[in-house]
Image 1: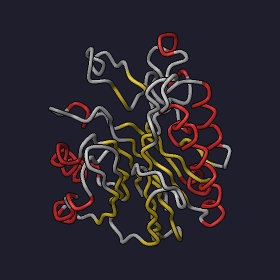
Image 2 (image 1 turned 90 degrees about the horizontal axis):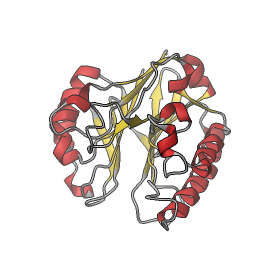
Image 3 (image 1 turned 45 degrees about the horizontal axis):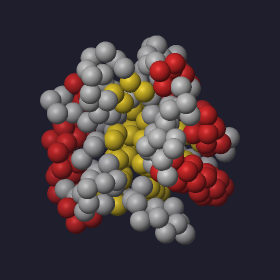
Image 4 (image 1 turned 60 degrees about the vertical axis):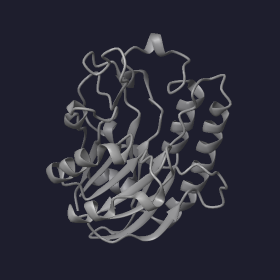
Length: 259
C-alpha cells in the first residue's frame, strides 16, 4: 500500500504532470496540497479517468487540499472540526483496507512567512489545534497516516545550509517543537525510519538555481501511527517530477506499507 504526499503548487497548471505521475508511481492514496482552485473547478473527470476517486476542499488562488484514492472514501472531514478558519488546509477520510479502517489525513500547514510576521503565531496556533484534534483521532483510528506539506524542516539534516537558515521560518525552534509534539502523539516520521542519502530534500526554491544546487529543505512528510510504522518498509522522495518543465517546487514523498 503506497501512501504519497505532493504539494503541486496549482493543480490546474500541474494536472498533466499529476496524471503522468499517477500512471508511473501508482500510489494507492495521495494527498495533494496547494490546489489553488475553487471547489467547483476540481478536474474530477480527468482524475477518475486515471483510475482514482477524489475528495477535495478547494479555495481560489490559495491553499486547497485533496485526497486521491483507488477505493471510496468515507467519513470525510473538511478542515479541523470546530475551527472557523477560512483557509482550506485539511481534509481527512477513512478507507476500508485489508488492515481494517484506515484514516488518511492530508494537511497544508501554514508557512508562517517570517518570525516577525503575524502569520507566524497563526502557524503555531494552527499546529496546536491540529495536535489536539489528532490526539482524538488516534483514539478512534489505530491505522492513521497524516501526510502533507508541513512547512517545517524537523532537524538540521533536513536543511541544505543550517547556519544560513538558523532562526528563520520553517526551521525555528518553536516550529520544530510543534512538529515534535505531533510525534509525541505516537506518530513516526516514516522517512527517518530508514537510512537515507545525505542532503535529502522535498522542496527547492525556484530562485537561484536551488534545485540544480540541491539547496533544499525537507518539509513534506508522511507521519504514521505505530501499527502503520511497524509495517512501513520504505519511504522515498521521488525527485523525477521536480525535473519536469514548469514543475512544482515540491517533489512527492512516498511511503510503502505491507498489508
